[in-house]
Length: 109
Image 1 (cartoon, helix red, strand yellow):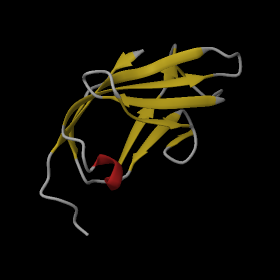
Image 2: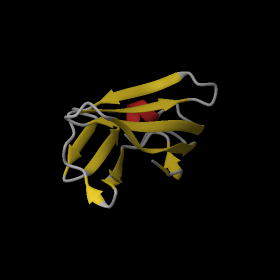
Image 3: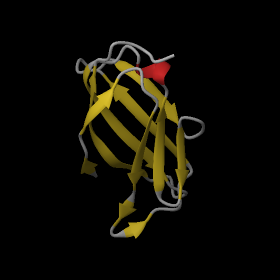
């Protein structure tokens, strides 16, 4: 488990976050499910992605795809966790930390 704080995000922006996962120095390939959870500082759920459209896994890299419409109301600090389960049903949290969103004037389009 590794803490990774991501400080320079902007609201109203499409953002891809990549997390390369290695356990004991080895690339991870045996993923059967995963979730990416974001909570505000009070612990209330902001959003949760499961493996699929907004959370993809390929070649040991999880990519979280945040859409501008999902980040439009986010300003300030939020906490996140990335979880996955392997074929042996072992749950692992390879990354956790904070996301910090800065405000913008509005959407471009």
